[in-house]
Image (cartoon, rainbow, N blue to C red; front, side, top):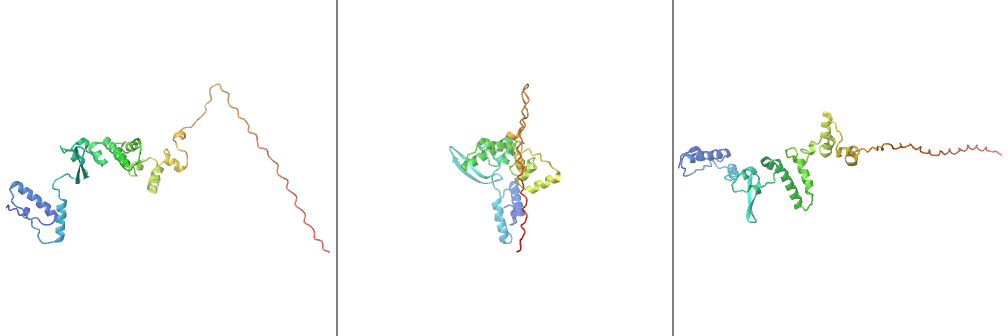
Length: 256
C-alpha cells in the first residue's frame, strides 16, 4: 500500500472527489498502487447523495454529448442510434463509415461539413417528416425553403429571429409577430416602407405589384393609322319639373 494521504483520503464532497481521483492517477503512474482507501468522514446523507450523483455523472469511457446508444441490425450491417450528437468526434473513429453517418442537428452539420451539407440535411429532414405523417409535398417547395434558409452562407430560422425578422418591409415584419415592437422601432428610426411585397400591399388595400399588377399597358397605334375621333356622348334628356299646385284658400265659417 502506498502512503499518499491526499490521494487516498477522498472526502464525500464533489470537488475533493475530483481532486482525489486526479491525485490517485498521478500516484498510479509514478508508483504501483495496490489498494485505494476511501474515507467518507462524518456520516451525512446529503454528502452521500452528492457522491452518488457525482459517480453517475462521471465519464469513464465514451464521447462527450452522447448519453445513450442503441444497436440495431439493418441488412448485413449494424446501425447505432444515439441519444445526443457529436458528429466531429464520431467521424474520427476508424471503424465508423463516414459516408453513412448522419445527425438530425442541422447546425452541427453546418459546423462540420459546411453549408451545402446543411441545406441537404434540411431537405431530407423536412421531406422525411412529412412522409411519415402521410403528407405529400412537392420536393421543390422544400428545396425552395432550404435555399432561403441557407442562401447567405449561414443557417437561418423561418421565424422572427431569422427570415421573417430580416424582411425589408416594416409592415411585413409587423404582420408576422410582435407588431407594436416593429412599428414603434420603425417610427423612432424613421424607416420607410416602399410597399414592394405582397403582405404590405394587402395591408394597405392596393394591388400587388406581381403578375398583371406588375406592368402598365399602353396602346401605341401603328404609323399612318388615323387618330381616333372622340364621339360626343348624347346628353340625357332633362324632364321639366312638375308644376306645384297652388294652395287652397281656407273656407269661411258661416254663423247663422
